[in-house]
Image (cartoon, rainbow over all chains, first blue to last red; front, side, top):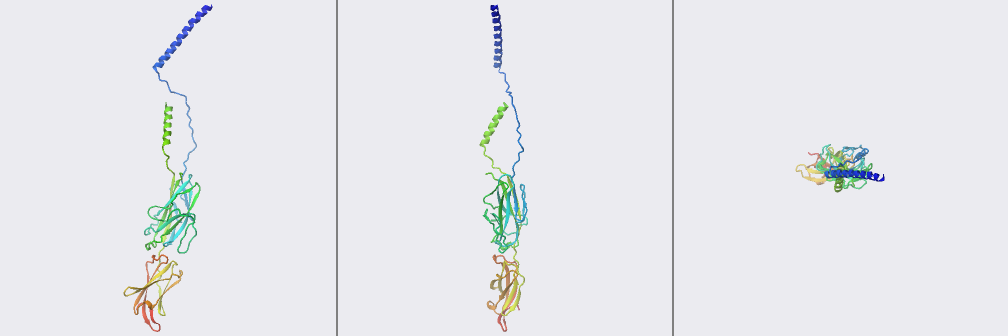
Length: 216
Length: 155
């Protein structure tokens, strides 16, 4: 009984080894054939949707003394009709207060130039009208001849003759934080050497202000 | 494979971005602030002066219309056009006040006729003058009782 069990047992082990050998052979053949394997893998994708992204805006607002507040919106013109005088003679000048406010979101640096306006038509001979920008406000209203108004602060740039091309009024761009304002004062006059041919002549001045995002 | 490629591309972009300098673009806003009319003064001539004989002088008078003005005068020999005297009048006269110019016989030649030309100008910028001048005729004459005198008008 014991020997028989041994034999029977012995015969069963050989068959198993044979099966294993065949399987190994198949695998070896398959390996030799080099069937391409797939690169498939489990994966998971996720779309992370942010909230609304809104670009900031650069926007300056102007206010002229005794005049309207405006210029809000990109490229919006401003009616600075308050900057006016009549009957000025050579050497006389008037000061006009302006407020430049940053109503955009980033910090702003602004600068300004002056040029001749279109209306009324420029009839002055040469460039006898001058403009200079200052910090601060007008010192006082001057009603006696010669009218020589001035401003409280320091000059932002040199005196500029108003010509057909833009003349820079600000030497170093002015930085204004969002929501803050910059009070400036424009002195507009008639040059002391304005010739006699300028009697009764007219014109208008355009101040071009550019507010740029302060990047540093 | 695609995942590997995507990773590679992403890595390449990151490396590229690291090498590219930042842009200097910035938001801007430009505004044209147009001022109102600027008008220069016009020097206005005085009205035609009055002329009155007062003792030995011809008294010429007119109203000063603007505090900024004074008046340049010239006495011109009518026949030759030669200017024999010049001067300024009305410097201290207030606006609305009467400017008086007495033409005396001292600089004038006897028996001759003259024109007194008066032109308004800016006192501080005398190159700015009125476009027109007034002319008042006078004459140098011998007058009974007072002797040599300047009288208003020509003969």
